[in-house]
Image 1 (cartoon, rainbow, N blue to C red):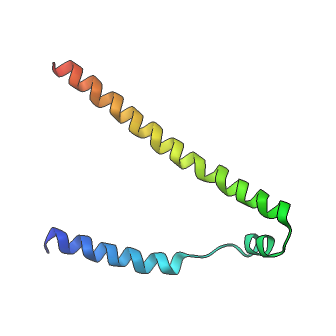
Image 2 (image 1 turned 30 degrees about the vertical axis):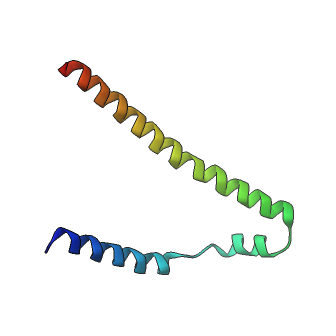
Length: 77
C-alpha cells in the first residue's frame, strides 16, 4: 500500500475515534453547569495546571535533543 494511502487511512481512523472519545466527567459538567462561578473557575484553573506539564516536558525533550545534536555537530567539525 502506498505511503500516502496509509496516511489518509490513519487520518480517517483518527477522526472517527476522536469523535467517539469526546466526553467529560459527570462531576465536572455538573459543577460548570450548576452556576457556581468560583467552583467553575477552580475547575478551569485545575485544567490549566494539568495542561501545562505535558508542554513543559515536550519542551524539555526538544531542548535536550537540540543540545545533543549541537554537541554531535561540534564533535564532527
